[in-house]
Length: 154
Image (cartoon, rainbow, N blue to C red; front, side, top):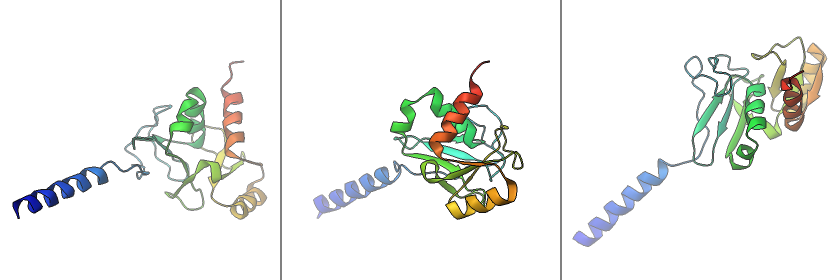
C-alpha cells in the first residue's frame, strides 16, 4: 500500500513539473513590459508582438517591425522559436502567427515604430483595410525584408 502511495505521489509530482514547463504564448502585459528590441513600453494592444522560444520564455515587442528587426539581427531564433506572434489589429490583444498574418503598410495607420505596419488575421480584413486606408499588403517575409532595408545605414 505504501509503495502504491509513493508511486502516485511521484506521478503527481512529475505531472505538476511537466505542466509548469509548457511552451505556449503568454498574455502581453501591456503598459508593464518593455520591448526587447527598442526598450519602449509595450502599450498599444493593436500593435504588440511576441516571440516564445523553444524553452517557453516569452519576449515582448511594441510592434511587428521591432520583432522583425530582432529576428533579422538573430536569424537563428526564427528556427528555434516555438511561436512568432503579432497582434491582430481588428481584434486587439489577440495574437496570431506572423507567418499567417497579412500586413498592411499604410501611412494612414501609424504603428509605434513608424513603419506603418498593421497586422490582421485574414485576407478579407486586410483587403478591407487597404480599401479604407490605401497602402500595400505584405507577407511576414516581406515585412522582415522591408525592416532590413529600413534599418540599413545610408
